[in-house]
Image 1 (tube, one colour):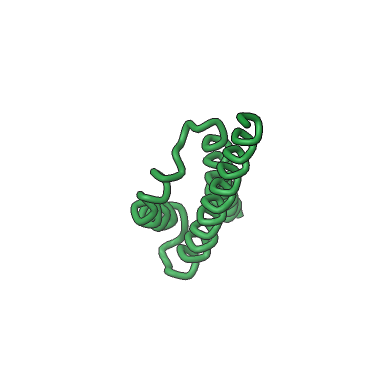
Image 2: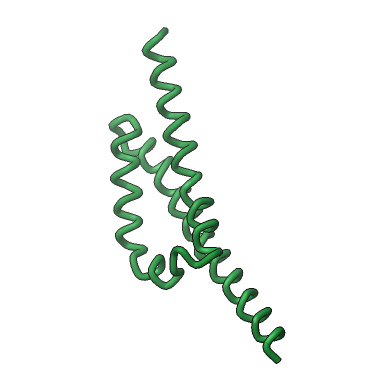
Length: 99
């Protein structure tokens, strides 16, 4: 029973950390610590990194690895969209103040 609880706690921690990454990058892209163009340029490497991370923290089967990697990738794509709209909103606000 103890090994099962350890396994469940590791998976909960891994999934929790995995889905905090997009939130952290949105927060970092707001004050321009991370450039959105750089994130879009390296999207393929990010996808590879996500699957490697998922391979290490999930059991050795494709279903659980994909269950972690695919939603995490779509969360990062959603982050790109929100980062782009936030940057556009910020730019339009700066133009209104400048004129």
